[in-house]
Length: 411
Image 1 (cartoon, rainbow, N blue to C red):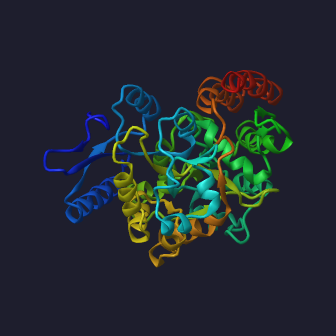
Image 2 (image 1 turned 90 degrees about the vertical axis):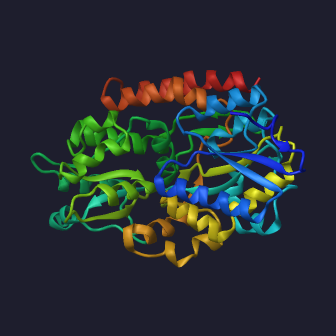
Image 3 (image 1 turned 180 degrees about the vertical axis):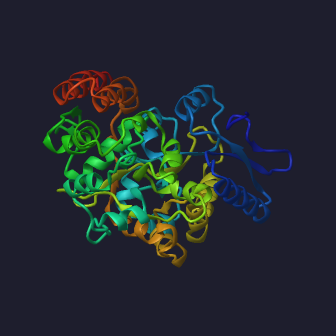
């Protein structure tokens, strides 16, 4: 893959930009390729070449391409992956490059997720709340109150609902936690959890406090005490739980909003399901998200043209197309208000009602988060959820081992 170092104008003066997309769902890939084709048709002097990337190992792939001088000009990534690249000087500050209309359309909390130091290093454009996807027939038969964004379940009520949904051969909930860190931290905002605390000198420290315990304790107790959650899905990804969900083995599955597409495609005929908001706590319906972003490489020789392409991709009608293709929510206020995203069908209206409650993921600005997640938090949470360690040991590992990792990045 050739990158910025070889992109640029040919003998005819035409600029060629490379756009690495991480779209993977068929509808999303189609939407991205269509938009690239539309841009190329309207801008014969600035051609964009579509490159298909993958979310698997994207951080290492991008780091290698940056260090080798072969990074794409326009980069699709997620905001929680940008900190090291932004502070490392690999991404362009977009503040002087973006049009005012785009800046004004995306709310400040979303921009904060791509702001590192004094610069903005990505345009956040798609975000994904976590929701409960539930078997409608089993919910009605159980007699539990059906939660709505206006009147959600508390975490305690959610735990009781899962118990009432449990039957021989059926669990009330399945927690797919093969990658447990993001789900645990982002849902903890609803209980007032923060985990990462910034001192006046700007340095970060990890403190696992009472509010941070609620979500992991709920999951642990549903598995170990209530028996309302199966232990098997703890090692699964979200897609792995769907066959059991369709077979009636699990009444509810906490999943990202985009999983609705797989449910629509894979659910057997006659299967009835609905989208419920995640439980609420002291922090209300707040939950953390790490939006998908579009960035421009610092080595790109045509940053203005690259930013113009980004702005085209994220015009409100185009942002709606990307959101529908990925079954996610747009960050832009005009796109979010599009009637196509406000319908009750497939739970779109539930998702849009949650948009105002989405906050930056707790680790968003923290350097060293990727290493902490992989080396400390993931194994510690996996052992806690499996019952191999208790809450005290979980706290000790997250704090002691985690702060050692962060300290290396803050010298």
